[in-house]
Length: 363
Image 1 (tube, rainbow, N blue to C red):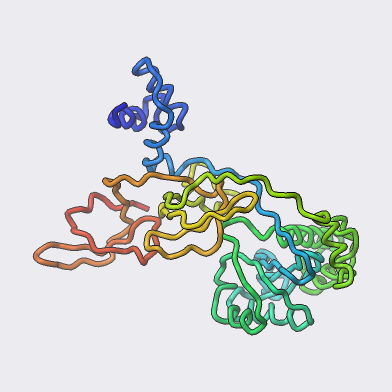
Image 2 (image 1 turned 180 degrees about the vertical axis):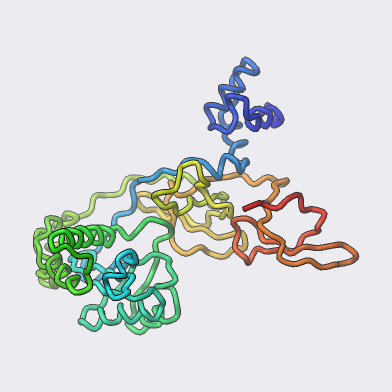
C-alpha cells in the first residue's frame, strides 16, 4: 500500500475516510481498491500524522495504582484547593492546603491567602508543629510544592517528597476534599452564608472524629497500637498477588502525553502534547507505569499510566510548527531566525535558516 493513497484519502475532507480513525480509513481503502489494507500498516501511518495523534480521544477514567501503607504517618498526601470564588466572603483567602494520612485518614487543613512557596511552606510547617511527621509526602507537580522553601522543610524533617506524574490527583486526599466541600456547602445552605474560614477547623474536627467505614473506626482513634488492625481492615492480612504484567510500551518508544484538560474543554480540542517523549523505564506495578525523558534526555518528574500515553512514529521528514520568531541575525551571509516551536518548552528554541520557514501558527 502506498503512502500516497493513505494521504490522499485521509486529507481529502470530502472522503468518508478523512480525519477519522483506523477503521474508517480501512473502509475507505477497501471501497477504493476492493481489498483490505493491513491494519498494522494503517496504524503505523496514522501514528506519524499529527492531525491524528494530537486529537486522538483520551480515556477519561482508568485503573490506577493502589497505595499500600502499613503504618500511621508512613505516607501523607497533600493538595491545594482553589477557593478564590469565595475569597470576598473570607478575608481574601483564596486557597486551602489539605493534607491526609493514608492509613488513618486523619486530615489537616490550612487556609491560605495565596499559593506562593513561602505561604504553602509556612502552612505545612504549622501542621508538622502539631507533632506528627510523615516519612513520605505525595503531592502534584505544582511550583507551590517544588520550590526551595518547601524542599528545605522536607529536608529538615527527612521527608521523602514525590509527585504524581500527570493530572491524576492524590486519590485519598481528593476524596477528603470532596467530603470537606460537601460539609462546607451544607453549612452554607443551613446558615445562609459563604464564609468558611471561621468554621473550617470545626468541620475538619467533625471529619476526624467521625466513624469511617473503610477503617472501621474514627481517624482520631488510630495509633501505633492498632495501626496493624487498620491495615488488615483496609487491605486484608496479605495483599492479593499481582498477576503477571504485560507492558504495552517498550523502552525507547516515542510517546505523547495526554494533556491536563479542564472539565469544560471540548473533546475536539487537542488531547495530547505537541512535545514528545521517550520511554526510559518500565515499572512493574498493577497497572504498570512508565518513566519518561524529553528530547534532551532530561528525566520527567513522576510516573505515567498507559492510558495517559500514545505511541507515535516520528518520520525523518517531519516538520514542526513555529509559534513565533524571537530574533533574527545574519550568519555567513544567510538570514537566521531564532524560533519558538509550538508546544515545546523554551529550552528547545533554536536558530534555523529563514528560508526554511514556511508559515507561523496564527493565534
